[in-house]
Image (cartoon, rainbow, N blue to C red):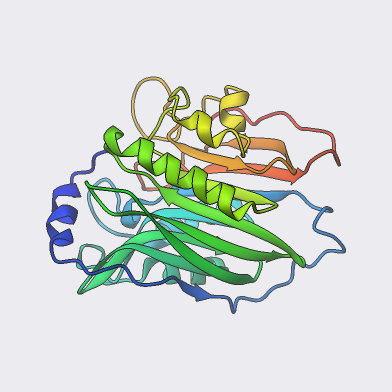
Length: 281
């Protein structure tokens, strides 16, 4: 979705540097240990936070943290995260939000400027063991995939977060890069989250629905993930590997961003009775 501040971002990109590596902070208290990772559902959220800006343009990480606190998710994927940029008051937004929620975090810049950066992040109640970045093909604005490995009660959980381009001409190569990466890594217990800037009916998404399940599409949940008038638009998505089962999903109409967060509850497949999807927010 095009933003009013996009021209400024593109102007600053003229003075950008090659993006640096991921930043990981995994020092938050960990008190969720259970006898087995199979015992409890896993709740995951994806949220495009628009640099924590409100509709008036003021950046307020505390309002984002307050919205996320009500969801009480185990793992949160964020897109459009500003780190020490002047348009957001030079705040390290991922560190600020993680501190408010007492969660660990990994941050991967998509664009590095001389005065800060902009990219994707993962927050986790569980310890973060590793993070890496895959640069995606892009001509309009640099895009990336943040690959985070989480210690899920002694079991590796791979969380992949991305924000695909706003130009449809870029989508094919970006989806192919994601597909090739999934095939190369062949992770067990994988969740892919993010703002894909594509509606469920886009045929390019079929490629990702090979290795991963897409319950928003399969169940026609029609979650409203964009703050706009008219029919719901689902461009923010959560897909997962086939060792997970679907329990519930929602997109509550909360927060200051122009997107709403998408929450999904998952469990290792075949081990519990499925619950109904929560009605769209």
